[in-house]
Amino acid sequence: MSRADPRRGGATLRKDKSVKKRIAFYGGTFDPVHCGHIAVAKRLLLLFRLDEFLFLPAFHAPHKADIKPSSAYHRFAMLALATTGEPQISVSTLELDHAEKRYTVDTLAEIIHRQPNDELFFVMGADSWSDIRTWREWERVLLMTNHIVVTRPGFDIRTDHVTDAVRERIVDLRNGSNAVNIDEPRDRIYITDAVKIDVSATAIRDDVRQDERLDNEDDVPDEVAKYIEKYELYR
Ligand code: ATP
Image (cartoon, rainbow, N blue to C red; front, side, top):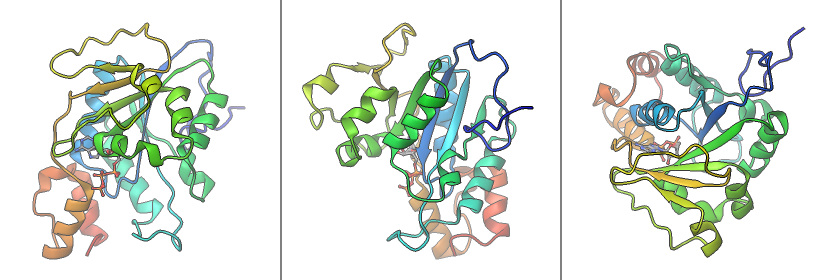
């Protein structure tokens, strides 16, 4: 009998666990998932020669959050619609399944425990990287897996907010230096400008709230635009 794969709802564990895979996890709220997120997934799959790219939507306690995101069901549904035609891109329910807020350090510990042989990457945008010191056990988080920091228009990528020990592990792939050495050790922090798309979920929600419709349908995949319309999200 197959066991449920914790990385995705419903999928099953690989039969041959000795085959080492390169897998990226992309944490966030994804309210909604937009074309910036999808471009990051597609581009990093190629650039880092990944086998799989997993969106990892965060759980938000409905009664606790200052800014209330859409329900996990809506956010998951939009991610599933946006990735359905992409065999290497899936949605992990790992954080949603816990039904309480989880810190990245705990999520990564669980993932590593369940798939110790895989080469793991955790993906974040430039704004998340700026805030990294506010993350619980942030220095440990940065040692647990490789990380990929993706530039975002309007956000500078600084490195002066982290310690020397962290800075020494940064591999800067910006400005055309996109050759990723896949034999690097497992605790690298890659910075890449391979995606430069100026879209944000906050701007999309604000647009819909003001005009009761998406101003720019190109900001989200078609199926996500239809979903937002059908379920009257963000009004
Ligand atoms: P908001 O505008 O509400 O802050 P968001 O667009 O940043 O939302 P999130 O779900 O918070 O969406 O983002 C998940 C991750 O994706 C974060 O690490 C964020 O930095 C990154 N990200 C979001 N948009 C982009 C983009 N256009 N380019 C690169 N990274 C992005």
